[in-house]
Length: 222
Image: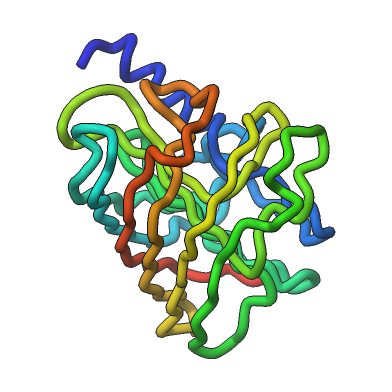
Protein backbone atom coordinates (compact mmCIF):
# COMPACT_ATOMS: atom_id res chain seq x y z
CA UNK A 1 0.00 0.00 0.00
CA UNK A 2 1.40 3.43 -0.96
CA UNK A 3 2.13 6.14 1.62
CA UNK A 4 -0.67 8.20 -0.03
CA UNK A 5 -3.25 5.48 0.66
CA UNK A 6 -2.02 5.00 4.23
CA UNK A 7 -2.34 8.74 4.83
CA UNK A 8 -5.94 8.65 3.54
CA UNK A 9 -6.77 5.77 5.86
CA UNK A 10 -5.37 7.55 8.91
CA UNK A 11 -7.15 10.78 7.93
CA UNK A 12 -10.56 9.15 7.74
CA UNK A 13 -9.96 7.15 10.92
CA UNK A 14 -9.64 10.51 12.66
CA UNK A 15 -12.67 12.05 10.96
CA UNK A 16 -15.23 9.26 10.74
CA UNK A 17 -15.83 8.35 14.40
CA UNK A 18 -18.57 9.30 16.79
CA UNK A 19 -19.58 12.81 17.74
CA UNK A 20 -21.32 14.05 20.85
CA UNK A 21 -24.45 12.36 22.11
CA UNK A 22 -27.38 14.66 21.37
CA UNK A 23 -29.42 13.63 24.42
CA UNK A 24 -27.41 15.90 26.75
CA UNK A 25 -25.03 13.03 27.52
CA UNK A 26 -21.88 14.85 26.57
CA UNK A 27 -18.74 13.05 25.41
CA UNK A 28 -15.95 15.35 26.53
CA UNK A 29 -12.92 13.12 26.11
CA UNK A 30 -10.61 13.35 23.13
CA UNK A 31 -11.50 10.52 20.76
CA UNK A 32 -11.24 9.64 17.10
CA UNK A 33 -14.61 11.33 16.59
CA UNK A 34 -15.66 13.89 14.01
CA UNK A 35 -13.57 17.03 14.28
CA UNK A 36 -11.28 15.51 16.93
CA UNK A 37 -7.62 14.74 16.49
CA UNK A 38 -6.35 11.21 16.93
CA UNK A 39 -4.84 11.02 20.43
CA UNK A 40 -1.39 9.57 21.04
CA UNK A 41 -1.55 5.79 21.28
CA UNK A 42 -1.44 4.32 24.74
CA UNK A 43 -2.16 7.29 27.00
CA UNK A 44 -5.87 7.89 26.57
CA UNK A 45 -5.25 11.09 24.65
CA UNK A 46 -3.81 12.92 27.65
CA UNK A 47 -0.51 13.39 29.43
CA UNK A 48 -1.11 10.88 32.21
CA UNK A 49 0.26 7.35 32.58
CA UNK A 50 0.02 4.89 29.71
CA UNK A 51 -3.08 2.71 29.91
CA UNK A 52 -3.78 -0.74 28.54
CA UNK A 53 -6.51 -1.82 26.17
CA UNK A 54 -7.10 -4.43 23.53
CA UNK A 55 -9.81 -5.36 21.10
CA UNK A 56 -10.52 -7.99 18.48
CA UNK A 57 -13.49 -8.26 16.17
CA UNK A 58 -14.49 -10.38 13.21
CA UNK A 59 -16.62 -9.29 10.26
CA UNK A 60 -18.65 -11.93 8.45
CA UNK A 61 -21.18 -12.03 5.61
CA UNK A 62 -19.85 -8.70 4.34
CA UNK A 63 -21.29 -7.55 1.04
CA UNK A 64 -18.05 -5.74 0.17
CA UNK A 65 -15.40 -8.24 -0.96
CA UNK A 66 -12.39 -8.38 1.31
CA UNK A 67 -14.03 -7.03 4.49
CA UNK A 68 -14.65 -10.46 6.03
CA UNK A 69 -11.89 -11.32 8.49
CA UNK A 70 -10.48 -10.71 11.96
CA UNK A 71 -9.13 -7.35 13.11
CA UNK A 72 -7.08 -6.69 16.25
CA UNK A 73 -5.35 -3.82 18.03
CA UNK A 74 -3.85 -3.06 21.44
CA UNK A 75 -3.87 0.73 20.99
CA UNK A 76 -5.73 2.53 23.79
CA UNK A 77 -7.41 5.83 22.94
CA UNK A 78 -10.19 6.16 25.51
CA UNK A 79 -12.00 4.07 28.12
CA UNK A 80 -13.87 6.55 30.27
CA UNK A 81 -17.01 6.76 32.36
CA UNK A 82 -18.39 10.25 32.79
CA UNK A 83 -19.57 10.33 36.39
CA UNK A 84 -21.99 13.19 35.77
CA UNK A 85 -23.81 11.61 32.83
CA UNK A 86 -23.07 7.90 33.27
CA UNK A 87 -21.82 7.59 29.68
CA UNK A 88 -19.11 5.03 28.96
CA UNK A 89 -16.91 5.97 25.99
CA UNK A 90 -14.54 3.36 24.58
CA UNK A 91 -12.27 3.95 21.59
CA UNK A 92 -9.65 1.34 20.84
CA UNK A 93 -7.57 0.84 17.73
CA UNK A 94 -5.31 2.43 15.17
CA UNK A 95 -5.17 3.28 11.46
CA UNK A 96 -5.74 -0.32 10.40
CA UNK A 97 -8.45 -1.46 12.84
CA UNK A 98 -10.56 0.40 15.40
CA UNK A 99 -13.79 0.05 17.33
CA UNK A 100 -15.87 2.65 19.15
CA UNK A 101 -18.47 1.73 21.77
CA UNK A 102 -20.72 4.05 23.75
CA UNK A 103 -23.03 2.93 26.57
CA UNK A 104 -25.51 5.25 28.26
CA UNK A 105 -26.26 4.81 31.98
CA UNK A 106 -23.29 2.47 32.37
CA UNK A 107 -23.64 0.25 35.44
CA UNK A 108 -20.95 -0.52 38.02
CA UNK A 109 -21.63 -4.24 37.70
CA UNK A 110 -21.85 -6.72 34.80
CA UNK A 111 -24.84 -6.14 32.55
CA UNK A 112 -26.05 -6.62 28.98
CA UNK A 113 -27.00 -3.59 26.85
CA UNK A 114 -29.11 -3.63 23.69
CA UNK A 115 -28.22 -1.03 21.07
CA UNK A 116 -30.62 0.39 18.48
CA UNK A 117 -30.65 3.40 16.21
CA UNK A 118 -32.96 6.15 17.48
CA UNK A 119 -36.06 6.60 15.35
CA UNK A 120 -35.40 10.34 15.02
CA UNK A 121 -31.84 9.73 13.76
CA UNK A 122 -32.91 8.46 10.35
CA UNK A 123 -33.87 11.77 8.74
CA UNK A 124 -31.39 13.66 6.58
CA UNK A 125 -31.37 16.96 8.45
CA UNK A 126 -29.24 19.16 10.68
CA UNK A 127 -30.76 17.51 13.75
CA UNK A 128 -29.23 14.10 14.55
CA UNK A 129 -31.98 13.32 17.03
CA UNK A 130 -31.15 11.01 19.92
CA UNK A 131 -28.62 9.14 17.72
CA UNK A 132 -28.98 5.78 19.47
CA UNK A 133 -30.80 4.04 22.30
CA UNK A 134 -28.82 2.57 25.19
CA UNK A 135 -25.56 2.03 23.28
CA UNK A 136 -23.83 2.11 19.93
CA UNK A 137 -21.03 0.27 18.10
CA UNK A 138 -19.03 1.24 15.04
CA UNK A 139 -15.81 0.08 13.39
CA UNK A 140 -13.17 1.17 10.93
CA UNK A 141 -10.69 -1.17 9.30
CA UNK A 142 -8.33 -1.63 6.38
CA UNK A 143 -9.81 -4.77 4.74
CA UNK A 144 -7.81 -7.93 5.29
CA UNK A 145 -8.64 -8.80 1.69
CA UNK A 146 -6.93 -5.64 0.46
CA UNK A 147 -8.03 -2.12 -0.33
CA UNK A 148 -8.60 1.18 1.46
CA UNK A 149 -10.31 1.87 4.77
CA UNK A 150 -13.93 0.78 5.25
CA UNK A 151 -16.23 1.33 8.18
CA UNK A 152 -19.53 0.10 9.61
CA UNK A 153 -22.03 1.71 11.96
CA UNK A 154 -25.60 1.79 13.18
CA UNK A 155 -26.48 5.49 13.30
CA UNK A 156 -25.80 8.90 11.77
CA UNK A 157 -23.15 10.67 13.83
CA UNK A 158 -22.67 13.72 11.61
CA UNK A 159 -25.14 15.99 9.85
CA UNK A 160 -23.23 15.47 6.60
CA UNK A 161 -24.13 11.76 6.59
CA UNK A 162 -26.94 10.70 4.23
CA UNK A 163 -30.11 9.30 5.76
CA UNK A 164 -30.23 5.58 6.45
CA UNK A 165 -32.14 3.21 8.70
CA UNK A 166 -30.48 0.48 10.74
CA UNK A 167 -33.08 -2.14 11.53
CA UNK A 168 -30.72 -4.50 13.33
CA UNK A 169 -29.59 -4.79 16.93
CA UNK A 170 -26.23 -4.84 18.69
CA UNK A 171 -25.69 -6.33 22.12
CA UNK A 172 -22.84 -5.44 24.45
CA UNK A 173 -22.39 -7.99 27.22
CA UNK A 174 -20.19 -6.49 29.94
CA UNK A 175 -18.66 -9.24 32.06
CA UNK A 176 -16.21 -7.22 34.15
CA UNK A 177 -16.39 -3.77 35.73
CA UNK A 178 -13.59 -2.87 38.12
CA UNK A 179 -10.38 -1.08 37.24
CA UNK A 180 -11.03 -2.57 33.83
CA UNK A 181 -14.02 -3.03 31.56
CA UNK A 182 -14.37 -6.27 29.63
CA UNK A 183 -17.15 -6.94 27.14
CA UNK A 184 -18.37 -9.12 24.28
CA UNK A 185 -20.08 -7.43 21.32
CA UNK A 186 -22.43 -8.89 18.70
CA UNK A 187 -24.04 -6.85 15.90
CA UNK A 188 -26.23 -8.08 13.10
CA UNK A 189 -26.03 -6.34 9.74
CA UNK A 190 -24.04 -3.20 10.56
CA UNK A 191 -24.29 -0.77 7.65
CA UNK A 192 -21.23 0.32 5.71
CA UNK A 193 -20.65 4.04 6.24
CA UNK A 194 -17.07 4.33 4.91
CA UNK A 195 -15.76 2.96 1.60
CA UNK A 196 -12.34 3.49 0.00
CA UNK A 197 -11.30 5.74 2.91
CA UNK A 198 -14.20 8.16 2.29
CA UNK A 199 -17.70 8.55 3.74
CA UNK A 200 -20.22 6.65 1.63
CA UNK A 201 -22.68 8.86 -0.21
CA UNK A 202 -25.26 7.61 -0.69
CA UNK A 203 -25.34 4.97 2.03
CA UNK A 204 -26.87 1.68 0.90
CA UNK A 205 -28.57 -0.06 3.83
CA UNK A 206 -28.16 -3.37 1.99
CA UNK A 207 -24.36 -3.18 2.16
CA UNK A 208 -23.78 -4.73 5.57
CA UNK A 209 -21.59 -7.00 7.65
CA UNK A 210 -22.13 -8.97 10.86
CA UNK A 211 -19.77 -8.32 13.76
CA UNK A 212 -18.61 -10.39 16.71
CA UNK A 213 -15.91 -9.05 18.98
CA UNK A 214 -14.39 -8.51 22.40
CA UNK A 215 -12.64 -5.65 24.10
CA UNK A 216 -10.99 -4.87 27.42
CA UNK A 217 -9.51 -1.64 28.74
CA UNK A 218 -8.39 0.17 31.88
CA UNK A 219 -11.30 2.29 33.08
CA UNK A 220 -11.04 5.97 33.92
CA UNK A 221 -13.83 7.56 35.96
CA UNK A 222 -14.09 11.33 36.15
